[in-house]
Image (tube, rainbow over all chains, first blue to last red; front, side, top):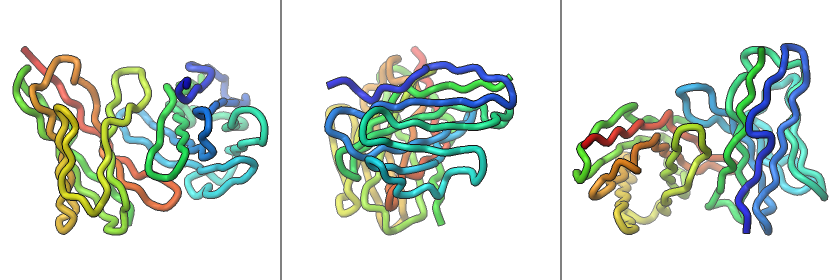
Amino acid sequence: NAGVMQNPRHLVRRRGQEARLRCSPMKGHSHVYWYRQLPEEGLKFMVYLQKENIIDESGMPKERFSAEFPKEGPSILRIQQVVRGDSAAYFCASSPRTEEAFFGQGTRLTVV
Amino acid sequence: GEDVEQSLFLSVREGDSSVINCTYTDSSSTYLYWYKQEPGAGLQLLTYIFSNMDMKQDQRLTVLLNKKDKHLSLRIADTQTGDSAIYFCAESLPNKLIFGAGTRLAVHP
């Protein structure tokens, strides 16, 4: 059973471009979470999804950020018109139930 | 409120025990977690404790929970150089985990 797979591992975007981050949960896991980690800080919750549903997006910035977890395929975190402040590591976690969350290796986004 | 606090840095000698402390604010948390992060890597779940327990032991790891004081600790026995990493404490709330800023553990010979 492969772990949580995130790609790409590193992503460089120019200001104003779009960033698409992908997350494939562990087999059998129906809960997906996205977190953002700024340098030298802990992880901050962004959004919690189940298949085809956004359950909690209380940590998502109001503009430019969106997430989906379609019936088929990976979960996608999309950042439109990126700015330098979006540079961070973005982690996806999946779980079969609420008490265990397993994290991917992260996507490190750099906006230049 | 949602807040988890940890000391930022801990240095220990190889072979000694390490104790990493954490305080949290939400008394309704069901589970409390310890994660390990090595440079450039994701988070590895080390252990977690249910809120109605006060201790959990797993090989070299011992977790102590003082629910009255909202204090959680992680003890690593016989600390090795491979234990050098950042350790994150997290509390569970509905739909999310709240993380501390992490404690950087440095192990020296």
